[in-house]
Amino acid sequence: MHIPDNFLSPPVWATLDAIAIPAVGLMVRQAGRELDDTRIPLLGVMGAFVFAAQMINFPVGVGTSAHLVGGALLAYLLGPAPAVLVMTVIVAIQAFVFQDGGVLALGANVFNMAVAGVLAGYWPFHMWGASWRRSAIFAGAFLSVLVSGSLALGELLISGVAMSRLMIGATLVFFAANAAAEGVITIFVLLAIEKLHPGFVQKPGASNGRILAVFSSVAIALGAVGFLLASAAPDAIERLGIQLGVTTKTVLHAPLADYTIGSFVESAWVRRATAGLAGLLLIYAVCAATARWLVRRRSV
Amino acid sequence: MHHVLLDRWSQGASPLHRRDARAKILTLVVFLVVLATTPADAVAVLATYALLLAAAILIARLPLGSVLLRAMVVLPFSITFAIISWLAGDPWRALALVEKSYLSTVAVLLLAGTTPLPLLLGGLERLGTPRLLVLVAQFLYRYLFVLSEQAQHMRLATACRAGGSSRGRRSSFRAATGTLAVLFARSYERAEGIHRAMQARGFSERFSLLRTARFGTGDGLFLLGVSAFLVLVRLG
Image (cartoon, rainbow over the protein chains, first blue to last red):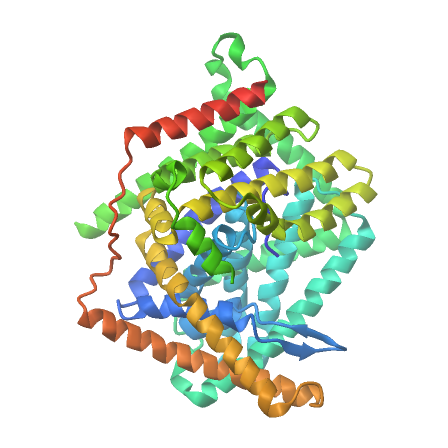
């Protein structure tokens, strides 16, 4: 589910942009360390493969068909960090070229689908992929779609998109059905690929684990919380959203309160917009500084 | 096809096409932020923004009708949620979702339609996107349509050999699985070939552009001017 712009409230998308940028940066660094140069074209072509794979329809259920989403499959084929990288690029190209998903909401979409989705999908494979292979693959692909969907739904609810309880239930059932289809498709495709050449598929647990385990547990936990909250207590999310809005407003306003330039900044909107832009600039500056520092430390 | 159209649009020559990608990206961000904080009942402000976008499309010499039509891809999603909000008794939010998400999409399309993707990615890189991400995006976009076409050929071939609806679900599921596996193997092989070919031609892990990107005075004025206009309109 690609969230377009203006569906999420400013505090929500700004927060998710602020989370997604360093998370992707970390994964890109990790991927850069794991890969040699020969694999760079491979990552691009694999991204194109996922796009192309979405054109092949799989018959599931009565008269309906599904297509592969591919986050978990990529993680099993390339390893988690490169898979996050490739999915990030896919989500960004979908936003810029195909107008599928917003630009300000890019952080949210990247976080839901590329970061949380891929890591949640890799986790079961990492943990018990060696012994219960098929169930691990299925569970991974299932989780990957379900986690992305529940996160998106949770973010929409926090942003104040009002949905009836029935509607939320229906959406969650729909996500679960999609997730099950993804699980089945992923198992069969992965086994078929392995039959062509066993070397294509990563060994479970091959990638360095600890950071990954923490990250993916967090992703799954977030997804689970989103799912439970959305299904059990949508009102609680809405209230959380209102409180969150209030606190972010006060937090963002406090440091900028002294900068009232005469009567020009009378209107609350200017303050809010300035605070938002200042927040974005701040995030950008922190990321740029961190990147520069990392590069310098590495080259010394 | 979609990409052919967007590629043709972005190759045009107009004052908007000539602006540096960074100036256009930053202006887009300002526009989106200002739009995001505009309330739904500020009809005059939203109308001004719509007119501004229309003027920009005309200045860029893009076909107004097709741009507006293409931006409608966002509408199914927006309208679904608008109906949900309406039913929940929040008609203003419903209206806001539709009009604001549509305007945002037109704005993004305007950026993509006046900036060839290599220049757009170059701009993003100069704004601090990690180089590895940009490189992967370049490769992805180059092979996206090659592989999509291959997938279409394979789908057609399967349909020709096995017939359409007479098959059982089981066998058509298996056929789709096989198609994907073969598509994957071919993509993998293609990637290795690409790498060897690029090494043979002396590829140095960086795509070079024929046009050098320069952030000139005009770009700075464009960014500041449009941003100031947007904010002034918003203040009314």
